[in-house]
Length: 338
Picture 1 (cartoon, helix red, strand yellow):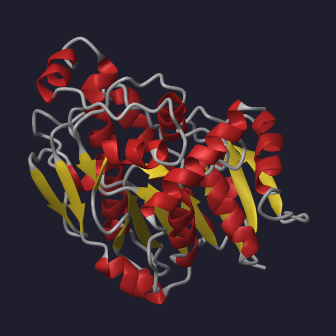
Picture 2 (cartoon, one colour):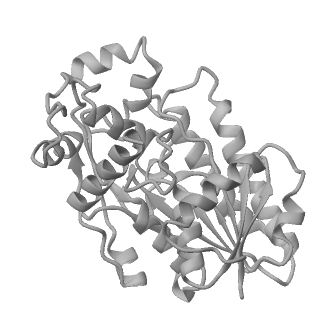
């Protein structure tokens, strides 16, 4: 049985990736910041599959060396998912950049040392789309220019972390070469396995369906389903065509935040507001509100992505957007009614 280290297994994406790995017959070691989180993860995964002794845990910190070598022992592959994600733009960009970059390099160094064959890294379309305005078309060759004025700390953290990974792969020495595949999702939605609503995606839906979001930004972007993200991460481990490539895993066309609201409204979620916020007002508020500032790269823009190479390499079709929206809402509603 091949073994995979999943960093950040207690996170929204990590849980789904672990469940997918177990379904495909891999054994999993998942990293958490505190082992006390492991019961929550196991209970969530059990909704999809019984781990039956194929799931263990270790404690790792993106900013500390301790435990990485031990965690990699006996692993054939690594899914490096752990990375800080907040919409709010911090006062010090290094709060996001340092753990993202240093954590990525720790994972790659330890994987190389342990003889791991391949690492699949979770990046983002924000590593491709930042610094541009209006209609933004991205493909696997697109990169964010971190020197542009309107690029936020989160966009910088994902871009610099991914670039550091490609540099590591390019400059590695020795006979045995570590392989790298990168997955670039958009904003991620879909059901939560644990019912934890702390992630930005779950919090957005919670505010929407409870009527706590009176206005929505004018923004169009390609979006992702967490189940698609998990499926491609796992398929990328042993797909020979995937080595050394970046894969955008999003919807085929962009959707507005307002489109989410309309789907929910027409399916009985009556508290949802479909009112658009004036773009000039949001841009003005961004001067005083760090969360609004973090949203600026999306406001007033349309992000389109070419997913044709992902669809071809993995014989994959994205989950329909309406299903993603309704499954997310049902998951949030279930958690709120507990």
